[in-house]
Length: 472
Image 1 (cartoon, rainbow, N blue to C red):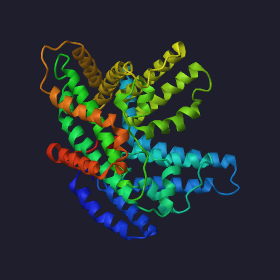
Image 2: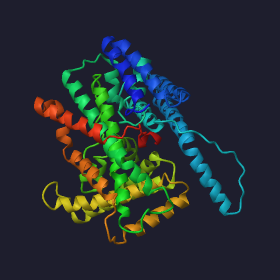
Image 3: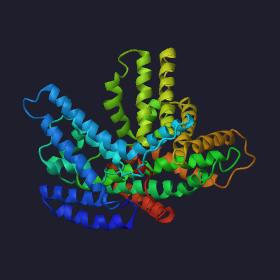
Image 4: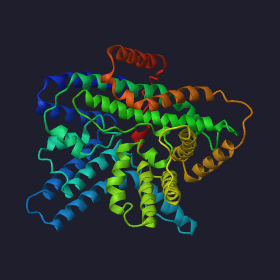
């Protein structure tokens, strides 16, 4: 079940009227059942996996938070949680990748391995709800959060359907209290929620799905679709597609939550209008970048132990961030690429003391230059879905050659990329104003809703295309 489908519309037609009529405890029970129905729509068998993750972390956190529990016992309980969560994630997401990589390495030295392979289906959203649940037990261990006492409240926090399959990755300290106490839905929340959902629909069905066919055509063969700089348009199509797709999902999730009195964290701002890599990760998939910072980079030592260990910590954090996105060498390379950009930026600042200006004309050449670097990174990322590693490498190399070859004419695909890309950039440039919809005048609100609906109706793709990040 996807947000941009008739099935989801029918789902909402049942869930929302019930939600508004029920009391607080009944609301939580109904939302929990609805969330499991929403998740089980893809494959009901994976609801057992979601329930197992939820139950294990609920019980372990209660034991961890019990009075008189010693530090050694609490550490053992945390390790149990981490092993359980990462073990499930490792088996379903990474087993086949590492098994195949080891098999190919042994074949290179003349050893013919004979072991079974597991053709496992990757559960939708497993990376998101695993990180969300795991951060809860870490926070309880750190004594930053008391353990949840009511199982239904905790289970709703983990499985709440708006954020379940593609985030944002909301911390327990932020969302769990909202699940544990009565909620009051205000008129401003409903207005903002409807507006955010409509914005997300524009990003998804107009921008992302409008460019998806061009991006798919660009990666359908062994190499670049054209032999000159027009190949850039296919990479740019994916660059704007993934922004519209993922940012659109986050907006729709936040909008749905607002209409029920919940608040989810902001996940995107203006990632393509920044002048450097650290600013990019402060604007792109914010809930993941802060998760990696707080649960990986800082525990590794952050920037507290000298220059070289700081660079190591940055590279390890981004390497694992790339691996979180997918089991493949291209995703590892993408993580290393962004880690290298962060290290280069840090070296430059240490050597020169110079920082990119936040305003003024000099900022825009830097923004354009870094946008080009971001686009090259998306080339690596998109290649990760293109079959065996040898094909991915050949495709990237062929693209790089084509992108450096001057083009005599402008390809027809340039026009939809330019138009929809410009729309995406305009939405990023105005994100702060778009977030304040309930503060607009009634006339401006009506105009905004009319424009959004017109874009969805006239330019929208209604085939119910799945969101890109469902597979991560």
